[in-house]
Image (cartoon, rainbow, N blue to C red; front, top):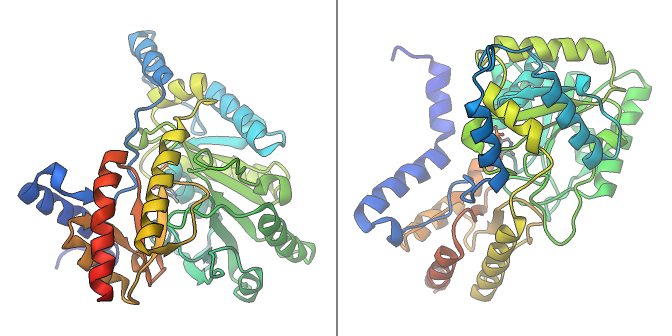
Length: 393
Ligand code: PLP
């Protein structure tokens, strides 16, 4: 093999969603699109808000010099300001544009943060189950991911987090609303976690709290996602418009840094440099100009809400067990047999594609993504029932 052994290993380890995707392509070729119930991908299927198109059309018409040129590495000042206003509103604290950096999605943002803060061998604590790409992102910057168990209902276990802190711990990375569980951490959990980190900070041991929040707007039942920026000084929020505008292919997101964080100016300078040197060189100009005008909008979450109801009721009736998701478009379901991979393969016999929990550090579960129409869910539910009935027989 002429490519890196590490990459070969990573290809193997990252293969669950890819395998499902390939399986889906094969099944769809054989059975047609209609014949396959593909719940594997977290690729939003709703249209962006109407205003997205009109604003985009207006910008495309603009032929002023420099419109498509390079920009300051932190992003266009007016885009940063506009996002800062949105963040200030959502988090109920005041943030200026100078503490915002526009990034190539949340993925770009996370890589920028990790590149900026990590020395080789330093540790990032991640509660399980988790978005599988974190392992690669942390490794990209020579860090070590330290996975920590959560409670039965996937809420944070602060004691376990505390126990996993070592003198190499640089950050704790949380994701709420969570992919894959759909769980939203409560105000109390965030307060407790912040209190723990605060107790370390008082002893001069600064641990960053990073919150990855691309699903912040996709919440149900009046839930509001608690803010880490309000609770803890050394905090960094990373988010994107991928899910809230249904534009993941456009690669636009942002980082918001708590102005009270330690050596904040240095941190900002590092982040801005990292935004330049990781290869993607800032976020796309076109999208920066779009979001400046519409960053207070969101897609219609009610569409996901009705799908969630349909799925939750149908799966419950069929005998599946899960914690009802408070946000995201994912449902993390307990596998009726302990081997989630076997059950996922069993579901494929019913032309249902889902992702095994093992791929997210959550064995014994599987993830259903409801980025599919109600019609698909309706047709799939009897198949889910047949699948569980047959495995129990
Ligand atoms: N973080 C989580 C938890 C995600 O689920 C995703 C995408 O699915 C990302 C980050 C990456 O988002 P983006 O498309 O904004 O880079």
